[in-house]
Length: 163
Figure 1 (cartoon, one colour):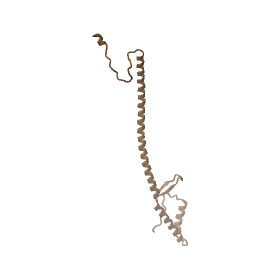
Figure 2 (cartoon, one colour):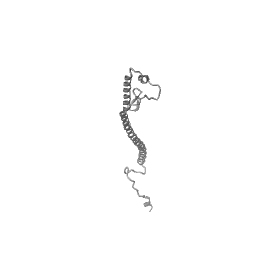
Figure 3 (cartoon, rainbow, N blue to C red):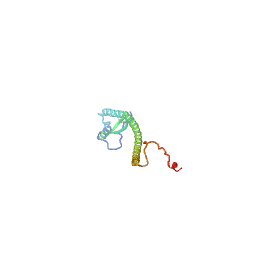
Figure 4 (tube, helix red, strand yellow):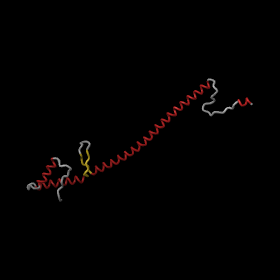
């Protein structure tokens, strides 16, 4: 099988278990009475490490429950990537929809302002209409023939009198 597998880490501060395991690996092969037992243990450790590397892609994730880094299998990593892509697509759809709603809201606010302005204009015209009706009621020169019709020009009688 070649050279035995080694433990790799970024720091020299390893847990006590790994330090003891390294010590067993170092001195265990030199003891004659337990050589075969130690070799069997080392082989099973190497097989376990190889299976671990085969199943786990070297990616760790911070677990929200324990706040510790836990290794992810390749299947779990693929599932997380797929879920991430779906969430990104959903986010993009929601972002587009929010932009559309924002534009619609702007249109609604603009139209509400226009309605308010038209209501003020209508109120002004109604006041002017009421004033004209009041003038006509007090003997003014105007007479309302019908509401909302087009005015009909009346002939000027003064021209007939002077001729």
